[in-house]
Amino acid sequence: MELLKRSRRLRNNINLRNMVRETRVSKNSLIYPIFVKEGKNIKEEIESMEGQYRYSPDKLLFALDELQKSGVNNVLLFGIPNYKDEIGSSAFDENGIVQTALKIAKAEFPDMYFITDVCMCEYTSHGHCGCLNNNYVDNDKTLELLSKTALSHVQAGADMVAPSDMMDGRILKIRQDLDKNGFVNTPIMSYAVKYSSAFYGPFREAAGSAPSFGDRKTYQMDYHNKKEAIKEALTDIDEGADIIMVKPALSYLDIIKDVSDLVNVPVSAYSVSGEYSMIKAASKMGFINEADIVCETATSIFRAGADILITYYAKDLAKYIDEGRIG
Image (cartoon, rainbow, N blue to C red; front, top):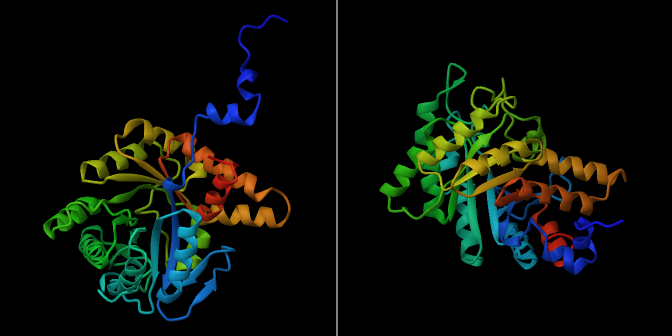
């Protein structure tokens, strides 16, 4: 048969396939989430997230050393405090868990890049992402607490802050207060497009952040909505966000694509705890090949338009890049 165009010509061998590959995955584009917990000599496995741990600040150093040796230098820190109250005051305590962990980690690993999650849910006694007014999260009162938390993180050494609360106006408030205190060069990565998702279940067990009543549907997004994602992303960019996040990732590849096509800032995607735990469980049952699925799903997120991937599989992906399985 006389065919002038044969797509298979460019698939003939591994060198050629790598040469013409359209989507590239780099260690520099990976961020690894880590949970830090008050106390000493703590490394406890998270039951719902096999292979993930809660670390006390002293044990965190061993985890960071392992991470850096894998070639991943970007970390997203989540704090688990001993003390919780109605307004989440431990979140902005200068001696709080994230602040303490940052000071220790930055001293030992000055070349690593530390991003901090800014939210109140891990710190409030009721588990919601802000202060309450008659069991309703008070948006405007919460902004002050979020801004105090972000500022305390940066003062402790955070390289970037990532507000995940989904309060209206929090990017503008944080940007103004960081600038006012001399941190004009500290970037904000906004959880701009954060859906109210069933995929967060394992994380809430990991961080002890499940709400004690109700749900978060009055501030996190309805997963039926697409246009709203664009509105949220553009609003946060107007307020000063430097990076826009879409969360979760796998069930929202269309949203990643739409946001990426329309914004002029980098787009990150968070492959969340439920995605991680499902792959782990299916692999353990022998239903899938874990490494192959991890490589394929990560590539799909980048292919959809993400520039940055936050994933509990960051260390594994770094190994797969070294092995030539992805990249």
